[in-house]
Image 1: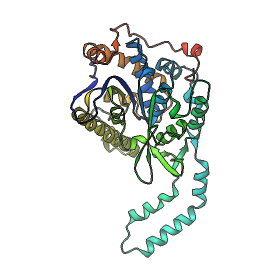
Image 2: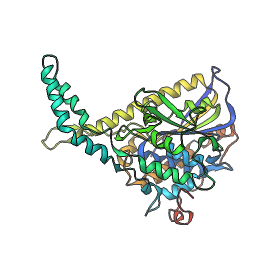
Image 3: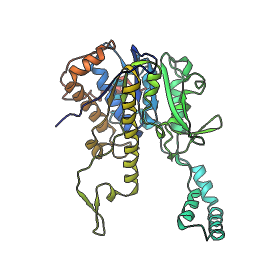
Image 4: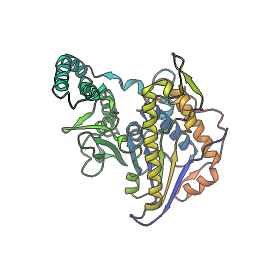
Length: 394
C-alpha cells in the first residue's frame, strides 16, 4: 500500500510581517463528528513522535467547526493522547455527553402549526402571479415549512461551559495562556467573525465553539448578541491565514475534508437503471461530494497563495487519502465507528511521518522541534488506559 505524501508549503516571500521561527500554530479544520475524531487520532500520533514538545505548547490555535471543539480542548491543556484514549474507549466518551442530536422540537412544532397558513399563502401568491411564476417558485415558497435546523447545539455549549468552568480552566479567551481563534460566519451578512481576536474576545469560548459548529440545515444557527451564526467552514475549511497573521513560522493543519474517490464501478438502482457509486446513493451523497470538492479546492488555492505571500513559513497539512473515505468517513455526522476512525487516523499518520521522516525532521528542526525516529507502529495506544486517565476533562 502506498502512503500519500504530507502537503508541505514552504514560503519565502516578503509581502507580510516576517514570521517567527519558534512560533508554532495548530489549525484544526472542520469535518463534523467524524472529522473531530480523525483530528484527535492525527494529533495523538504526531505528539507521540515529537520529542520534548507537546502540542498543547503551540502558541496559536485556530479552530473551525468541529475543529474548534478539538482546538479548544488542546489549547486548554488537554493532551491529544488523553483525547485519543477517551475517544476510543469502548463504553463511553465525552462525545456521548454532548447531546449533539437534541431535536429542535420547539421550532419544528411551531412550523407545523403554521403550515396551513404557509401553504395557503404560497398557493395564493402563485395564483396571483401565475403568468410569471413557475412550479419551482411554488416549491421554493414551501421552504418556510422547514425549521432553521433540525437539531440544537445547546448540549455542546452547556457541556463545554461546565468543563471550562472547572478549576484551572477558563471560558474566557482573554484568560487563556495561549491564543485561541474560533471562526464562525454571521448568517445575515455572510461576514466571517473570528472569536478570540482583540475586540471579539468577550464572548464565552463555549458559545463561540457552538456557533462555529452550527452546520447549516443540520443545526439551528447559534444566536450571540442578536446575531445568528453558522458553521465557520462555510467560508473556508481551515483559515490557516489566521495563524499566519499571528506570525507563526510553523503551522500544523489537520484537514479531514477531502473529496471521496470511488472506483468507476456502477451502482444498480431498484428499477434496473445503472448509475455511478455516488449518484446511486441519492441527493445527499451528491451534495456531500460537492461540499467536499468545494472546500478542498479552496484549501488548495489558499496553500498556493500562502506559498507566495507568507514569508519563511512552513505549513504541514495532514489529511486522509480520498480512497479511504467511502469506508471510514462517508457521513461526517456519524457517531458510530469512532474507534475505527481514530485508530485509522493514528496509524496512517505514523506511517506518513515514517515515510517522510527525513524531510519533516528538517522542517521541524527549523522551528526548534525534534521528530523521533520510527518505532513499532503495529498497534495504537491501548484503549483501556482511558478508564485510568478519565475523560477528556482529565
